[in-house]
Length: 113
Length: 114
Image 1 (spheres, rainbow over the protein chains, first blue to last red):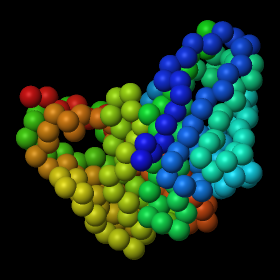
Image 2 (cartoon, rainbow over the protein chains, first blue to last red; image 1 turned 180 degrees about the vertical axis):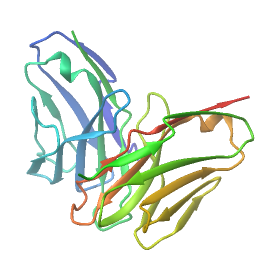
Image 3 (cartoon, helix red, strand yellow; image 1 turned 60 degrees about the horizontal axis):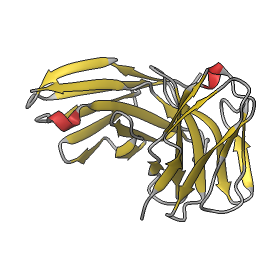
């Protein structure tokens, strides 16, 4: 199993550009999450999904959109990038009813200038 | 407001020494408390997960304790190794939040020097 994979690893965007961060898991987990991690701060939940076709907002959803058309994939879309979106983004997955263990991807470091 | 606070923010120890990291939380009631290790440039990896009824859980040289009365948890690292250099994150899951309302602490950055 590859676990949770994310692409790209790094990206520099100009203000106003858009991009999609990709996330894929091969563990057949129903829950998937997107977090952002800013220096010196705890991870903040952007969006999450409890299964294909179902998504919901987390703590900091503004400026982002998600979709979940399959169990495996959970892309995060940034529209009109702003410097405040400079951060490290982590995707994670979890199997409900199991051990509560959450598996994280390696992260995408995004800089908006 | 549900919060998770960790101390110290950073710590330097010599290889072979023990250390203890602290986590105080205001989340109540809660379902479980986790400790993660995050290497630089990587995603967090689970070390221990304790439900509200557990007092201690070990994973090799890592031992987590939980005192639900005082709302404190600690992570004790025994005989530290250079590879223990990382950030350690405490995470609390509120009882009513399901699997989506995890509350993350800011982490303790540990540096182990030879």
